Length: 459
Image (tube, rainbow, N blue to C red; front, top):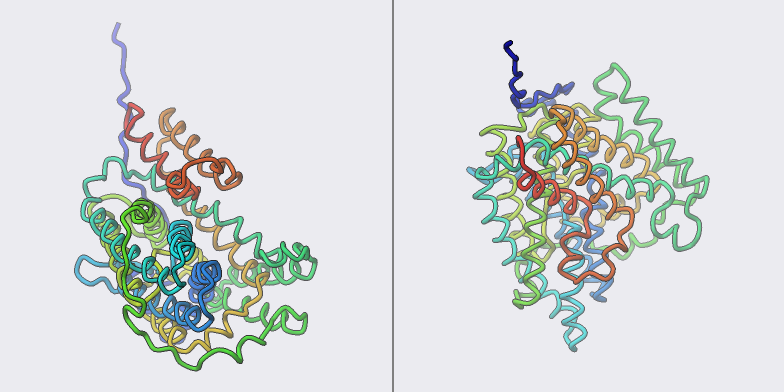
């Protein structure tokens, strides 16, 4: 008797459909490009300036220095976004990939700064050390980027699918918090006020309605229309505070190495590890952008993109430290904008760059955007972040979920979401462990990467 044996299924490169109006190399008309670019800026504006606000507030940096740092955060984000979208030789992904200030470095930066001020140093001394650590640490990410092509056996669609899914799912908490009024509302016990929720759902409803339209102009403009309507509705409700605009300078000039560069080896170690984690998260962001843009997520072209993107991350962080602001990285929320507007053209990145540079040079203009109410932003970001998670699910859906792959997926998502929902699990861990695993994205991504190497079977 002959017994037929069935060969194991072969892995084929994922093919993921896209319903974009304008693809990666398309050049949308000027007006449409401006509308789409403004929506990206609205989506990333708060994320760009918030790390600087937290750091400067904790270190008691003067209002003048704080405003200068925030302006440079916007200015450098514009420069960095242009580098990513344009691609200069091996530098940049060539995707519509937006760069902004990274939240991942908050712990090490605040720790290093408080060590200086605690020893009697001034906030300016703390900034000198911080910018030096950020400057030299960026070379770690640059070094890693040159060897990513060797990792094509371990950075598989399963690993990137886990990371992209976790990027979306872990950010949902940020979106839902904004819908309820934000952290400030939690402190003053007004969180979840019906007015906040009403404004947030108004914005969300407008985006869904316009995005479902057959009219491409309405679809591409859905987010900015919803944000403007939400903004205008919030003014008579008392949710917009213009009082701080009078104290803003008209123009802010870039001054390189304003505080100098310091260095401390003990403080440098956690920075080096965070740059490694940032590289892994950037791979996830760039993979999500590739998926949504209808670009491949395997093969030579894909690895060329992520190598260039991670290299751009590192170089942009060097530029950021040189101009007195904090490390830059790819932003994930903008992938939701690409999906919702149907515009994946990297040329829109040029318009985004110009707007961010303009906002950085003219703080009085950026201040108007800065007072955008939290519920308005939350109504939009809850959908954007969820859309990123859906992009990760799309990647996972292309994988043959064998027992091995299902095990890797379950453990990685479990630990990644677990750390996100219960961050106190690391409360007694050493500072270095906290720095590495405080992010659900890094926890899940590292878990998926290690299990993909360790567990025997088809990769």
